Length: 385
Image 1 (tube, helix red, strand yellow):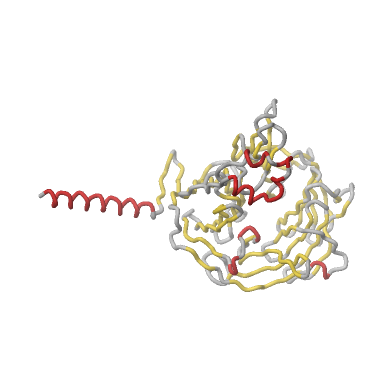
Image 2: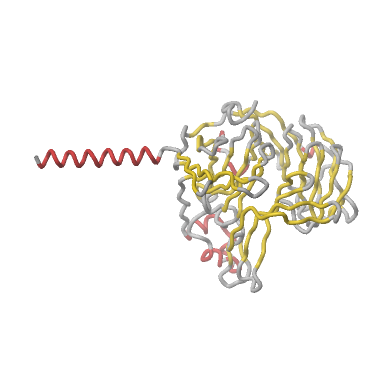
């Protein structure tokens, strides 16, 4: 009898354990305070997918005699046209979807449509027009790079929504400058007053944005351990995806500031030791000036450092999986965790920028930075052909 009873107890416990494990593998949608929460397990529904790619475009900007970029960032339009630009030197060059050189964008200087070096110089595509922000102003150019107009700004655009609105990542300090608050704000551009007006705050969090030196002198910002705001805009759906990167919780909002849903995933932030931090920063923390980083750096990394919506409705999240290591999580339009995407050849996710058909990156060839665009051949439900 005792053996039989013991067997029943063990069997009941086993069934309970199996049900718990099965529940952990399920995706649940719960409505809390009227807002749908998509609760995802730690592992994706359909596992890891190895991406199959083909190279579709290569641009060597240094083939052009007028290009003198030292290092450059890339802005890609939906049709494949790109702007290669140096954000710290106010130099930018336009290339067509087939890699044809279209000429420079903007000029260095102080006049209308001109930008001074050493300012944060950022271009934006908006339909057939190009906007450039820098030196606290926003300049508009036509599709051929011809200057049209500009106006002064109080806030620096992070994402241009349309020609009358942008998102900015705002930093505010208290009077004693001991506490910093980061705010994701929707800003309206008013042509009448030639200025900008803060319309509403979408997400706010105090004590993020820097890893502070405990002495009170200075701080550190890095994408691995610094709690910060992480956000993106889906232009087709008019949705904002916003998160505090130390948590795997993404708020899906409209431009009225209303929360449409919340996407969550079971996640344990990666622990880091002092030795890990020494490895991450190398010789920098051997310098007496920066040794404070070893004591101030958090003992856990952030959860994510990038969110990117695609035209298909899917959302890609670059999840921090180790010291200076990330993986790509893919969620469908409902916020369900479906895949982990694995890049070919051991390519690091930090090097690529995904787009609707694949991804682009810069590769080094003969000590030069070469822009390369790839099409992803599989996963047609995620990447359009």
